Length: 105
Image (cartoon, rainbow, N blue to C red; front, side):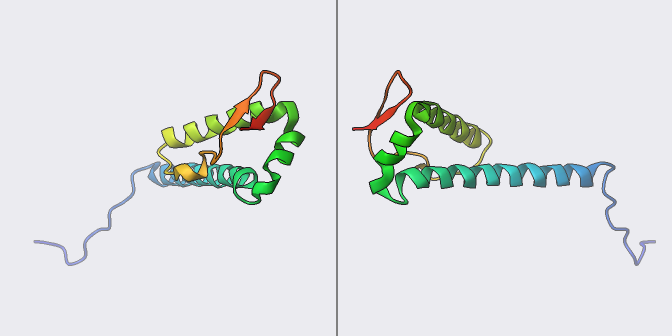
C-alpha cells in the first residue's frame, strides 16, 4: 500500500554545509572578478586621458601590478568564471620595462 504522504528527501549529512561552502566560494570568485574589472577599468576605460599619469604614479610597481592582474584573470578563468575579454585586455599597446615601469606605445 502506498503512503498518501510521501517523505521529503532528507539531505545527506554534511550536504547543507557543502552547499554553503560552494555559495561562499562562488561569491568570493564573483567578488574577485568584480574587483579585478573595476581596477582594470580605472586605468583603461574610465578616463583614457589619465592612463599615462596613472602609469607614471605607479612607477616601478607598474609591471608587478600588471602581472598580478594577469595572474588573477588566469585564476578566475581557470576556476570557470566567465569574463569578457574586454574586461581584461588592454585596449592599447604598452611596453613593460626592466625597471618595472610601463609606457604606452
